[in-house]
Length: 465
Figure 1 (cartoon, rainbow, N blue to C red):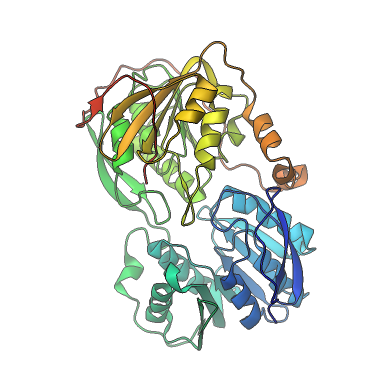
Figure 2 (cartoon, rainbow, N blue to C red; figure 1 turned 180 degrees about the horizontal axis):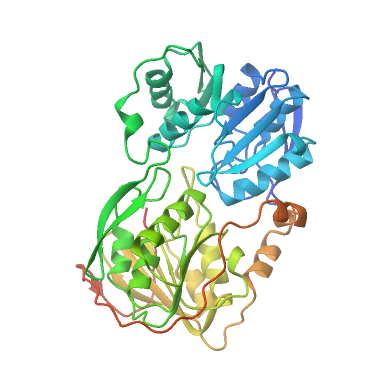
């Protein structure tokens, strides 16, 4: 039975205890993905109405900190779980939560989309859908291939969060649900894997939705026409967003520069920097879907000295130095506006910039980063603006106090970062290769211009969505 106590949000330390089903689960979590600090009512509903078969295998999608997976495993001491993760922070805390609750030897953490669930091996699949319908569809197709005949797919989410469309898509793929309930403003549906199913819906073969495929969109960079690949779940997956386009049109001379594309998404800024003659380009993102897309675009564009690395902000690149940071900072945590990530980007940037190095941010006009830029850089310029966005630039002065971003992060959140032990880091190493070294200078590349006002003055700031 579901606990009737209110599920607490996490303390700043990233630790909290929540009643899930009949168990008190000690959750280890940290910011970086939706609902990182709470056990949601949808998780509670699943725990009340779902169980892993004895000695069965369960597959989890969108499980966040994996508290739900831990609770269901405690109900069945001989069951096993595979948790598919698309986010570096979720990957780390999944293992930490499993370890804290004594089920780590029965939990496998799989980085998606680099790795896939084993086909035909699972008895149960549990999905907490995202806000991206096409990503949910792709997960449903992956799940269908992973489940044994007679297995069950369980979906649950808030009535206002798109769960009805996910249930509708599952019915089009799998047939009518065996069970459907609505409680606590949540909805749950369970679908059996039948031998006879409806004909596959048209969306099942759509580029980016069909497993193993990419979607793409056209973009012109440095007078070169490219088709950048993307997939559901990647920021601005249906085309170049206006904020990033504004930053592209106002890039400084990057010839011979060491460039960091922070929060790279599909990698458009990093690709542009490489084509503009950057000596080296490093792209980072906490989102594993984005890293996969950026790597594919690097390969297709044929750019040298360019890598994409999974990283929580500057975590994977500490000790490296750059001349330019390019960034379109995220400001949503699920459906909530959260400026903490952007503030951390600005706060820790001096630690990776050489003296005279520059950070360029593009932001929505309603977000104000001027306080952080003044505090950590001593001032900033508004390089360009439109009605919705502006590009902010700041230069690291010679007198700024710098500290390794890894040390800054450890001080800012001492109780969250220590949760990941050296043993876990060895077991789940940071995805990606080495950081590129300076290469020979390439010729400067002309960039196309977009309508914007270029100005040099003080305050304000933002990010695009």
